[in-house]
Image (tube, rainbow, N blue to C red; front, side):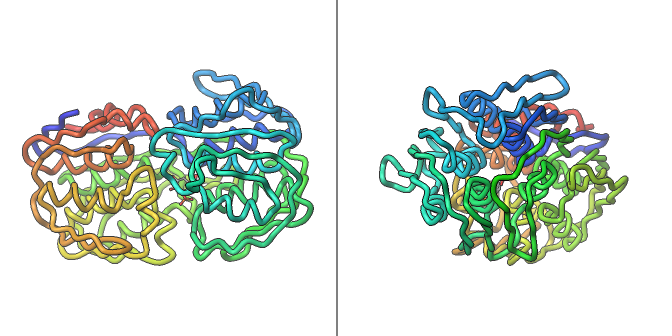
Length: 426
Ligand code: S3P
């Protein structure tokens, strides 16, 4: 897809699609609950549709309407063996969270996914699941999917996770639903806590203190109404675009601002960017607000440490923003980016430097000396939705033509992304 822009402003307002992490969890936990779960503002992106497909294969009736999804839960012990292999598509969240659930079932199952998911590390969930007594096998012996999981009853453990990953934490907590005692996970830094919030909203006994979350086994989960907030990871592209393009002012309505996800807002502030937080409210434990963003003159910053998990998916577009800022931005402790849908560290460094940015990769991040003009070129998205959207934003200030290959991969998390971006351009 080709993007040629003369500089123009972005103006108007937008409601971004529902949060991907929360949409996945609402389908999963609704499936394990008694009664019906109604989900509004559900993200109909390919990843969340993979989750729906997997639970349908295990006997859960899920109805899709224009404005809501109804999940008719089977209870904690009501899933049945899938007749075929579970296909998680491109979705790490589906793969890792469902593995925790499958480990405790009274049946065996297999799961796989697309070429990208087949390369992503599953050892990080296999290790704690084996400690809980689960039977999980990487069928190719490479620590990746396809996995075969023979469900059994599990034992509660305390797991000291080597990575700050909500997917790992959630996998272990979900397996904890099927264990014989309390299960807890301590992370090196706090990752997104949607699992803890939503499981307790559904009736599980979950406690959280610092970077440790614990769950008691065998709760009765009750179906509930879930209003999914707009995804801050999707809002991020418009925040960056409006900050960068002079004369812009954009109102993003109903965006989730959970403190385990709002690192981008803190970074924008530290760069001198102006985002007003309006109409704050909370639903199901998840805070949301309208975000009014104004184009701003930006300077470099440092992004590191416990901030990283709170903005992990936003780092590609933050790199674009840093290239537009004056001065140097340093990103550290972000090695997790190498094992996302693509190697996002290498791809951002390579592609932004081909556009003319002064950017250098480091072992665990990058150094960006901002302020150089960008030039359009061919950008290979590597089928990674966040790379495609980040370079659509970069193209807004680049001269010439930016040609993003397989740009339609935005379907994973934001099917209407290009239309929504075009709708704000003056
Ligand atoms: C997610 C957690 C993050 C994030 C991913 C969604 C989740 O992954 O990158 O897009 O829904 O739990 P990690 O937990 O592996 O960091």
